[in-house]
Image 1 (spheres, helix red, strand yellow):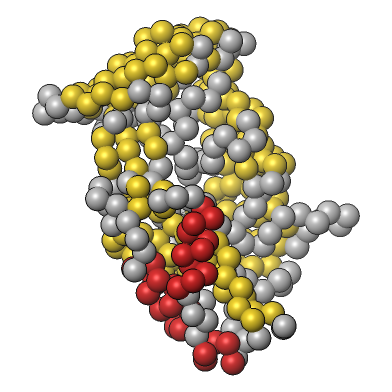
Image 2: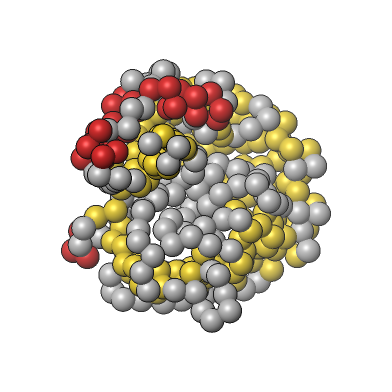
Length: 323
């Protein structure tokens, strides 16, 4: 037998499931898989492709049995979305309509207020962002207030962006041809911190953030950055390949699967709070944790010019194949 260990970075969790006619998963909002409905925040059901299609049907439900999302995926789990995906508020009203290619957001994404009125239309280019990324420079095509009055039309106007719960104004400024132009102001940390930024044709020139203690940070080119392993993705592949040993018990029993490790990248680059979000087997889980705990320091993430703690997830695929 020969071991193959592969890795992919993404901010969604992964499960390894047998290809049955219907698979049911119980999940927490942080992507953690749990064993029963009572411990879950929502439920994911994956069913066989429709006749003539190779894409699985993926439906998610809140615990009140109302739909959370519907879409189609090229994989059973995790969802690797293709085409249109609809998301819904717990009330049952539509939350967003987005489009995917090869599991990545593309084209226009339409968002709605909790009252059902249109809120925002933004455009994604292939590979520019994921649903959980820090990208702040997406083109704004249209924007409306909560009564339906247009603020931005055809990429031109004065836009207003709110936090995910619509409790405070997160960002406001001018867009021309969909791109931010001139002064942009906003807030973070539940409205307690305030920032000012200057843009030129959609590119961030400079910014300052003032927190609730009066401390000010300055930044250029990018408002935020994700943590990452020193070197590049290939370097982390090499680290895992060199350090992971396929457990003998699992190798002998032909146990394979994808274990998902959740962790925090601390401000000093250390990894902490490591935990198995989706288990495969005791031996594989323990080996994945062991190697991750011994990982060299990462480059920490930043937000508004400040080094910050960032939660992260990594799926590691343990698979066996004949020589």
